[in-house]
Image (cartoon, rainbow, N blue to C red; front, top):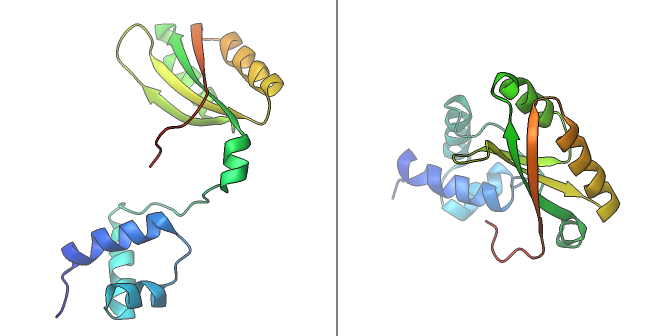
Length: 145
């Protein structure tokens, strides 16, 4: 039985999301297809922009040791893009989301300890273009996919 790309691609993506370091031979064995089919699918997925990179997943102990917070950010309208650009350069900003409502953004920040988290919150609050912030420290992660 020969699988079509629309059948192989989602399965490749699922396996790579579990472990981006899986090699082509392992993927081919797991999916029961040739290595050539895997190479072809991955190349196509990269060319189409479906796969744009490969990343590191943090170990559970390290990941659990980080203190995270959601920072709601209200921006001054004329400084929106410059402030977003500045936030995007901060390594401690793990995610940045444009939202509707009273606030304009949610920044997810990570720090190794409370003092660093406090410094990050102060830095964000003091940025030119930030009108105000409201922060919530994440106490526990119940689900993350």
